[in-house]
Image (cartoon, rainbow, N blue to C red; front, side, top):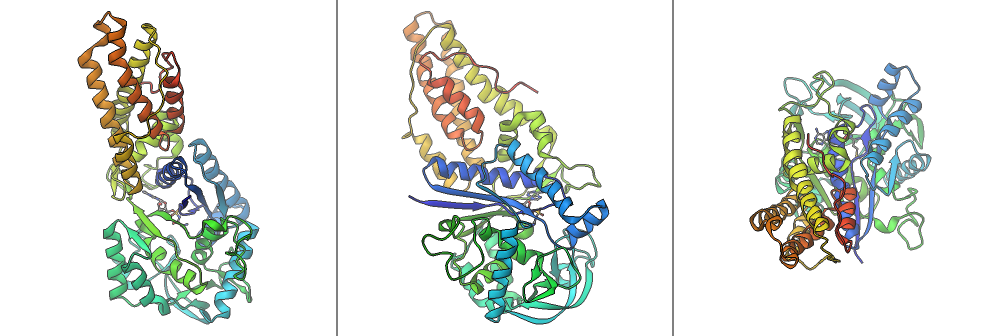
Length: 480
Ligand code: MSP
């Protein structure tokens, strides 16, 4: 049996869940559900990233203690994912006690082997990214992602010897041992590693209180990214101790290590391609197999922002299109791995065309005719179909939007056959059945493959079309 371990980034709790986080999380859910469907032993991890200067400041501005603040926002993420039918196996919070302890154990190990050393950090820091910046990374002196001027830091710090790992990282990424996809993202990282010298990274902050204390010097807290990356291990129950964890019979779900897929967008690719694998090398742990970088969304051509008032929340989507409608629209919004521009107008049109008129209308027409003419079928799903093959191929290559197109192409073909053969004009029951049966069979096959994307709707249609006497069901997608 194959195993499949998939993760999303853990989200910062300075923002409520929005369509960007939702996109990654739904995509990860679709893949996790697909892998469970094909029989893989699957683990799906998501969660929240709760420490660091940025969160500390947000809590201060909200006038509450950081923990109280992060509890509130973390709950909003949990609720949003429950509402969207996200099937994560764990929800990791970096404020969890076992996570904190494991991070301390891991850092201690890296310190003991000489990969973390006392030093001084002098340079620029963007609090929005929680990342150290070079002049070269800036545009007109501003962080290109946050449009803010980074602060100058000059403080004692424990430094992680990232520079030591440059050559080995390049080798592992070039050879696909640590796979980065799509290929243009891999090329970008390879050229970065070839042309620029990796700097050691400050792994501790003296002036940030809201963080995990450095175990050998509690006047420092852990750099928030060093803390956050380890979630991928602690989310499986890892305790940070290196003598036992990967031996059989270890605690937790460590058999799932290494991750088969880390899903994220380009904003956090570089740190995932450098600091994270270097930490694992320092810990002597196997590297994840693949990073897949999906596209970044713009709304009507603009970046989402509170000040523009164009932030779309998952609730905005589910209120309007239903849970499965929202999941469908997100997954078909852009070619997976490429940036996309979305708008309410596009969502409305797509919903009406593909769901209300497409899937909804076809199942309603066929079930209605079967009931009216009292045609009994007793169908069983056919899992050897050509359809199954091309769909599975697309899914295995993470072409999620493509997999949906394959299903919708099939729906459309059936719709055309139904219209052309117009069984409502026929009088012989056998003839009517001859037209409807293959269409109903196709609807059943398609609905089964829809399950990773639209779990509830899929289940409804599958149940409806597996009955001996198919009956007209409730309307699945009311028109907008
Ligand atoms: N906390 C870090 C990640 C640590 S992982 C060890 C972080 N959090 S975040 O809340 O900013 O999430 C960034 C991720 O959210 C992106 O990589 C992407 O997965 C998702 N998205 C946020 N906005 C997005 C869009 N506008 N479009 C698509 N995905 C976006 O970075």
